[in-house]
Image 1 (cartoon, rainbow over the protein chains, first blue to last red):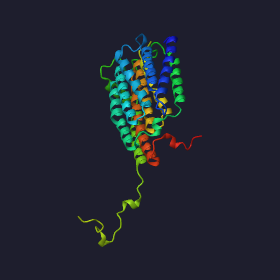
Image 2 (image 1 turned 135 degrees about the vertical axis):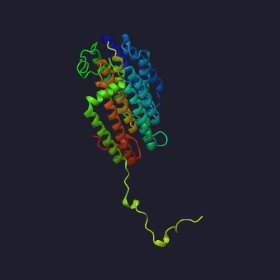
Image 3 (image 1 turned 30 degrees about the horizontal axis):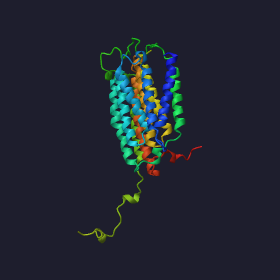
Image 4 (image 1 turned 60 degrees about the vertical axis):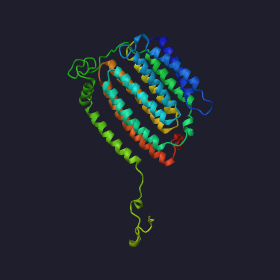
Length: 256
Length: 100
C-alpha cells in the first residue's frame, strides 16, 4: 500500500469516527442525519481504498464489497441503536455477513459453524436474557452514552495505528507456512482434494488434539459455572410443606 | 498488494466498532454484544491470514475462538442475570463501587 493510500485511510477513519459519534444515542436533539451522511461517505471511501488495485480480487469480487458493507453497517447499528432487541438482531446481520466473507476465504466449515453457533445458539441466549431482564419503555442508560468522544477517539487511534502498519504489509506471503513444506503433515487450503470440513477436522484432531480436549473441558466448566451463577437461593423452609393439624387439612379451601 | 488486505481491514473495522461500543455504551447486554462484534473481527482476521499463508492453522484457531465465545456468552449472561436480580437494572454505572 502506498503512503497516499494510508493517508486516505486516516481520513476515512476520521469520517467514520465522527459518524459513530453523531449516531450514538444522545439525549439532546438527534443528529442521525449528519451521522448517516458521514457514515455512508466513510464506508464508500473505506471500500474504495480496501478494494483498490484488485486487492479484494480473486476472492469474492463484488460480493466482497456487498457483504463488507452489510457487516460494517450492521456493526455500527449494533453499537448505536438505542433499543436492545434491535442491537441483537443487527448482530445477526453482522454474523451472516462475516460468514459470507469466510466463504470467500475458503473457510466453508467455519462459516457454517459461525451461523449455527452465533445466530443459532448464542443469539437465542442473548434474546432470552433480554426478554428476562428488559425494563418497560426505554431506560435512561440506553438513551445516553458514557464519554462518547473519548471512546470514538480511542477507536480512531486504534484504526490509525493499524492503517499506519498496513504500508509494511508484505506484498506476498514470504513464509510458506509450517504445513506446506511438503512434509508428512501437509494440510494446505490450496491443493485439497477433500473438502474444507475434512481438512479442518484433520488439522484439529491431529495437531490440536490437546486444545480440543481442553475446550471440551472448558465448555463443561462453563456450563457448571453458568448453572451455579444463575441459581436462586431457596431456603429450607420453602421446601417443607406447611405444618397443619390432622383435622385441618383442606379446611381453608373454599368449597364450590 | 496481497488479496487478504481488504478482509484484514474489514476485520479491523469490526474490532474497532466493537471497542467503541464496549467503551461507551452503558447497558450491560450491549456491552457483551460489543465483545461478540470484536470476536467477529478477530475470526475474520484469523481466517484471512490462514488463506494468505495457505494453511489451516488460522481456521483451527478461529474454531477455538468460537468455543471461547460460546463459553464467554454463557458465563456472562448468567452473571448478567445475577446482577439484574440484585439491582433490577442493566446499567453498568450501578456497579461502580470500586471506581477510583
